[in-house]
Image (cartoon, rainbow, N blue to C red; front, side, top):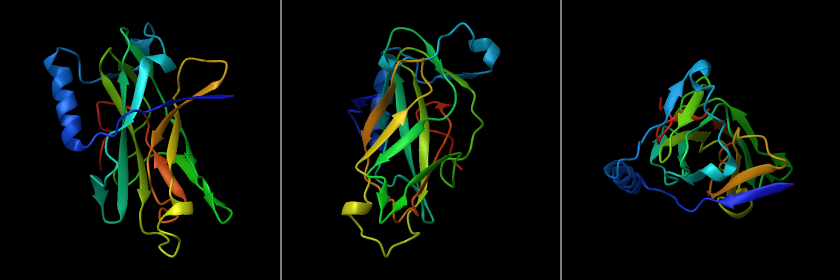
Length: 197
């Protein structure tokens, strides 16, 4: 069984800056804190209802030499701190073309580099992030739209145990045929944008 919650916003870099300035001006912490396991033992793992996930930018703001990166922002919208550690599990829709399926691997890429998973404490109003890396010129013989375009990315985070899997749903359009049917997802990291290379 699956539950989804639609992400409500796609933030351009300018809008993200305004959002973060507003959060800061009202006294909420902007950044989560990365800790070792012993420092975070008293802080519970985040639950689905505590977080919102949104696309920071899907317009090529993070690109270099045929490589693309899309950052995703998580905001703790609750009144208590929580922690996350690990990688999001990612599903895309659609997920195949002419019998070739999309593969998502943990790690990093040319835009958002691989970072070893660490416990990230997300205070109320604070942010954490992860990124998706992909190439954009592997197979340009495939269609430029339609059957090769993702419509949705579904993310399952390493949350508190729940009877059924809960996914955050974001609308993102990427030509997965051009990406060679391959995406790489970074670990969850502190702050509004994952570490870049």
